[in-house]
Each structure stands twice: as structure tokens, then as C-alpha cells.
Length: 290
Image 1 (cartoon, one colour):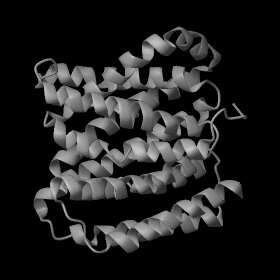
Image 2 (image 1 turned 180 degrees about the horizontal axis):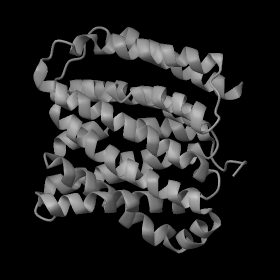
Image 3 (image 1 turned 45 degrees about the vertical axis):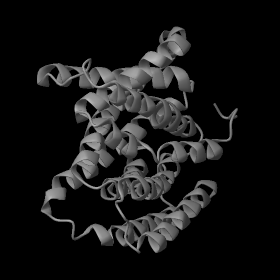
């Protein structure tokens, strides 16, 4: 696992590009939040099992019991993140939901410092402050949207917490087993975590309109199988904070797409805020090398 077959930083660049579209696809699907979250993960898992299924059990046997538990936990956290994120996008603006997810790198940096001994250095600390500053600048334009968006904003924030724990749980495991068996287990556990809630609430799973299935399949293929999977690949070679810090570009792309498609015009503060976020990523990679 020490010699990557594909450059981890290039993997992150591709992943970030793929992760610009989920908020758009969720809006276009026009389906129940829980249905979208479950079907997205279930489709990804179904597509992975024929490719990696035979390697899952041998790879899981290599892991210690605590590592297996962390793998399962990563799946549960991802399932929770997906549901909360999909709900957030339907309850607030794409820009607001996308930029609140930027709290992830801050959570990951602090938790990784204590839980994974990935110590904070001056570059990482500077990147954290720039992330906060850039996010604050961009959100200036969303402050007057009204109380009706507060629930969606809260769900977006909670979704960031779940995503942080998902990445932290997978960090140590990804250095021990290959990518495909790992994500096959994680995506399967995520779908199974949401299935009981789907059955209890009787959300539609098999009776959605055809356009909804198309956009959910796009969610499974692009931001999940490409985006999340490449982030998990990079976790095998880079620190958790470095991988997570790269999401600063995700909301910039999502906001621009929402502007083009849904006419949710961003504030003038998008540009200086985006510049600060880009600089924060440069410092995060500098911290990786220190």
C-alpha cells in the first residue's frame, strides 16, 4: 500500500470534480430524501459486488476485529451522511448546503490529531483558518434567506459531522486492504443501514418515475463510485485531513452549477471566498509534505 499505482493527488482532483454534481442530481431526481440516499448506495454496492465480491471475505480476514468494526462503522456513518445530505439539499439552497459541508476538514483535522496521531502543523492550522474565512465570506450572501432554511442548514452541518467520522473510521483500514473490497463492504453496509428506515417509513423505492431512477443512477456512478471511491483510494496514502481538505472545491463547483441550472445566484463574495479556499488546499498539501 506504500507505492500507489495511481497518483493520490490526481485521484483527489478527479474525485472533487465528480463531487460537484450530487446536489444538482438530487434536485433533479425530485424524490424522497431517504429513497434517494438508499437507492444511490444500493446501486453502487450492486455494481461493485460482481467485480470485487470474491475478494471481500479474504480481505476482511486480514483485518483485526477492531479494524473490522471500524469498517462497519464507516459504512454506518456514510449512510447517515448520505441521508442527512440529501435532506439538506431539499430543505435549503444548494450553495448553503454545499458550503456548510466545508466544516468537515476542520472536524477531521481536530479529531485526527487526537484519534489518529496525525499532528497539526503550522501549514494545516493556516489551512484551517483560511477554510473558515473562505466559507464565511461565501456564506455572507445566504445570511438573509430566512428561518425556513435553518433546518436544512442544520442537516447539512450534521451531515458534515457524519462524513468526518466516516473518513476517520476508514483511514487506518484503507492502509491495510485494497480499495475495491473496502468500498464494497462500506457501500453495502451503508445501504443496509438505511433499508430498515425505508421499510418503516414506507418510502417509495420501486415506484419512482423513470427520470428519478436515471438521476439516482448518475449519483451512484459519478459522485459515489468515482468521487467517494477515489477519496477512499487517497486515504490509503495521504492523511485524513489532506484528503478531506480537498472538498473545498466541491461547493464552488456546486454553487456555479446551481446558478446555471436553478438560477440560484451566488453573492459577489463567492470570488474572494473561493480564492481563500483554493489557497487553503495548497497549504493543506504543503502540510502533508512537512
